Amino acid sequence: MVMGKRGRPSALEVCRVLAVFLSLFPSVSLQCKILKCNSEFWASTSNSGPEEEFCTALRAYNSCVRRTARTCRGDLAYHSAQHGIEDLMSQHNCSKEGPTSQSRTRTPLLPPPTPLLPDSQERSNGPEVCHYERSIPRNTAPPNYTHCGFFGDPHLRTFDDDFQTCKVEGAWPLIHNKYLSVQVTNTPVVPGSVATATSKLTIIFKNFQECVDQKMYHAETDELPAAFADGSKNGGERHGANTLRVVEKVPGQHVEIQARYIGTTIVVRQVGRYLTFAVRMPEEVVNSVEEGDNQDLYLCLHGCPANQRIDFRNFRARAAEAQSAGRMRGSSVAHGFTYQSAKAKCKERLPVEDLYFQSCVFDLLSSGDINFTMAAYYAFEDVKMLHSNSKRYHIYENDAFLNSAAQRSKDLLSLFLLNLLAVLLWIECCTVHL
Image (tube, rainbow, N blue to C red; front, side):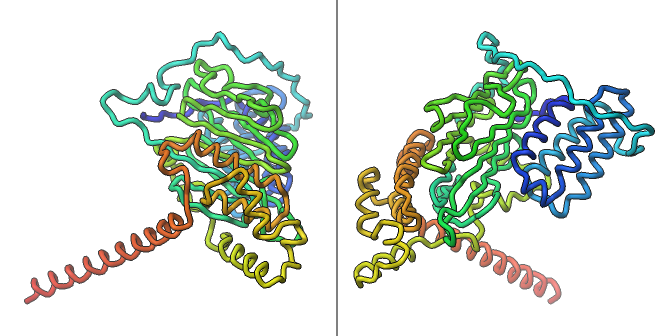
């Protein structure tokens, strides 16, 4: 499938998405000052006016956003603003060079509320380009689907089936490519503990050709909506709008977002007080990197940074050793579980002692919250629904070790080949001179 150029949103659409996003992330606004830029642009464009005035306001907005680059680099709101500005500049034929201040001030007025139109169920499913698998040329190999999951204290399964337990407190990006961005916010499970869990989740679907408008989905503890942030349940008013849908499976507990135009399915759940995330996505979409973006920080692609990883095997070993020595007066007893009782509880839902079982044990020992048993269980159920290879549903400790060893071997092989090439070039040079 050849992905095309994204469609253009209206000014109000971009402003609404940014305003909602930033109101939901006040800490982000304080850190990178993006809220100030957004509010100034919103005020200056609330009233309709000449195109020249709009372009002037847009250039001022662009200048304000560029000044925040150092503190906002890698932030989802910052990058969303950048994309919105580029789209609006092109849509309104605004030059990047020109005045950035108004000759007269205008009193900002609140725009009239836009009535939410009901999602059209009669609308056609849209053109071929809005159906990922249909748009693939005949006689080509079927797409290879990958899976990423994020759950519990938290535990991460990357697109490469690497399984990690991480700290990652605060806001972290899971996915960021040409078509969507996903960011989670994690908070400590127990005061003083390194273990965290997801309390907020934001997904931005970027506008795409004649298929969908830009849409944002935001969930947080005790608020798992059955619609996008603007109240709609599909991709807007374009011809392929129904190829992006929010489907509520269990009210307040389980939502599925189907993005057929990019062959992607996302599952968001609330289990206990925390959220879980799982996605099925074609490799082509996974690797559709924005120009100049090295993707280093995106957890689903590269995993957690080394300094954010937790070796829960050592944690488990210490818990088992403490129990056998009769010294279980620490955090495990305080949280209500010994190593053996945690294993027994996890065994009720996860009979196979794979890394999902081990993560369940870790979560019970580190938090005492029995809901984490169900978080691990549902994470594995999502794997069975979303992963394309049934032989890779279960991941074991040896698999994790082999993945790590394979990566080290690959690095060593690359180094060896580079050294060999250098030696061969040196020999060739010596032969020529002789």
